[in-house]
Image 1 (cartoon, rainbow, N blue to C red):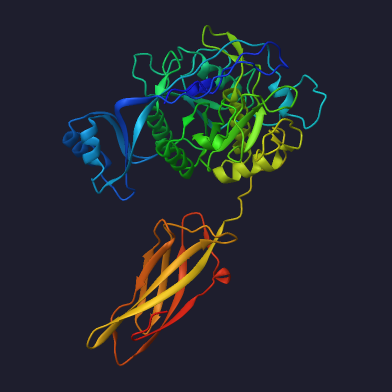
Image 2: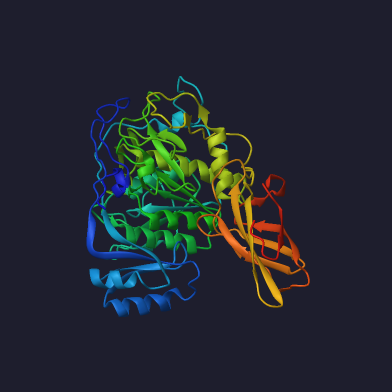
Amino acid sequence: MRLAFAALALLGAFGASAQGADPAARHPFRSQPIPGQYIVVFKDGVRDVAGETDKAVRRAGGRRHHTYSKAIKGFSASMSDAAVQDLRYNPNVAYIEQDQAISLAAVETPATWGLDRIDQADRPLDTIYHYTRTGAGVYAFIIDTGIRSTHSEFSGRMLAGFDAVQDGNGTNDCDGHGTHVSGTVGGTTWGVAKAVTLIPVRVLDCSGSGTWSGVIAGIDWVANSPLRPAVANMSLGGGFSASVNAAVANAVAKGVVMVVAAGNENTNACKSSPASEPTAITVGATTSTDARASYSNYGTCVDIFAPGSGITSSWNTSDSATNTISGTSMATPHVTGAAALALEASPDSTPAAVTLYLTSQATPNRLASLNSGSPNLLLYSLADGTPTEPPVPGIAVKSLAGKTAKSRTTWVGQVTVVIRNVGSTTLVPNAVVTGSFAPGGTSSCTTNNKGQCVISSPAIPTVMPTSVFTVTDVTATGKAYDSGENSASQLTLSIGSRR
């Protein structure tokens, strides 16, 4: 997919004629599939990713580009359409997506005001950025065009990173966008978190172009890094991609706060990736008049807004260069920096706790020109306190249905169990249900994507014609079983019954 998000479009870059003016330029997403290039995602149960990748690529007669083991399990490769169709029948393959090309655009605009806005709830601005934390001890991965490591804004606070582009430039920024984003996250002058450690993850080339497969390789590297506490900035995006969203979600599951741009298409952010990934913090852009920027995406997938129009930060053309550009690419690093401040205060906080902290501490009801469904929340960086864990969502039994099967001397009971989220009718996949049959013993099953599974009893002698099934436990990642919310917890089965 080809993007012009001010960055993957690098979601960044729109021009403006004055600091308070909303940029007039538009850089909407343009989907551009790459012929013959695919992203293959394995099922979670695959253990030997490298081995399965080798076998699949050899059989397809293809050329491998990346292997993924942490953010997702799978690989990207060039192969024929016939090979792809054959690969879809591989029992280890969950799904296959065509790779997409992405790109960014950037132009100059006047100077910044963003830091001055996020440290106070109300106007007028006082021309000062107030802060009590610096992000010291926190690692910030910048998934972008690289970083100019010698820039004076970063003063030795950079570690070696990762290069998915492989064009001989390493993690050096030959475009400028990544250096600009890094300056807003953690620059000495322009940064929100002025002592954070920056790590370049280069997934876009000197023209600001790249592929989803390269972006996933970068996320995979971040997820595999032992550096914590950590935030990651993704000022990029494109059309919806299940594999990109899955990679972001798995990085979050490994403890990385993933902050992503809503996009610059002036449309619903739920249509794009990674903006539509629920576990990421999705950021929309505002102008200096506290209005949603006319280019900014919107909707229920946006978590928070931050200054994005006319933002000045570091640039790649010299060790002291600056540039002023606009877009949700520029809004996103304000939130990434604020997340680093929160992690400095509470290094063991989970991404969910940091998300709750930033959204609950944000300044409410100050923004104009919001579309329906967008949160009226403006980033506030000078919040008190530390992140606290959000309540664990509950799950419960929605229904039980039973039947029996009889042989000459024994019979077996089968119970179909359906699991739902507490407070809604949404069903829960991948929940492990444990139950006991009395008589009969204990058994378990795992729910499918419809939230249901079947528990079968051991063989019960026919001289015991009745058995009582009881749900004893339900477990699911990130959820808590609330038996008090069960629609039913027991079911009586008898030979020949169907209930």
